[in-house]
Image 1 (cartoon, rainbow, N blue to C red):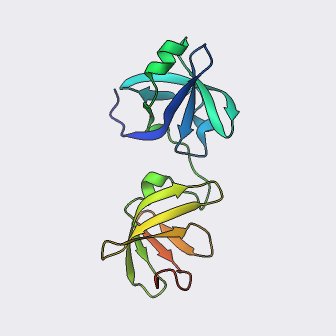
Image 2: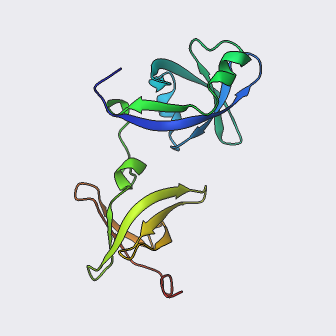
Length: 167
């Protein structure tokens, strides 16, 4: 393998057609950056090529997977990319792996808890936050609520909408 930490890129959902193509559920909206990248599937280094998109999901070819039976064996397998191969991000964009476990602080420096998950639902991401009492709540990741992200110090400053935690 590699000394690099492996980062999940997506999960193979189902075979497509008869020539070994598979549908990938991506964990990133930038899957095109990994077209022909060296990825790991089932502990083996492979190369992938994006063939096309169907309903926003990439259909990929994996070198060495040439028929539907081989593709079927990969159903449910996760696809990983070495951390060193992650592409640079634009300003105000972050890898999900970097947001997980960030402390959430409000505008008056009250510690609200930590980000336990980032839900991707199309319109915008939503942060799942576990508060200091073990309760969870959801916060849309929009500029109105997310005021500052400090990945280096693992802190996210937010402004909660009125009534969010009063329920």
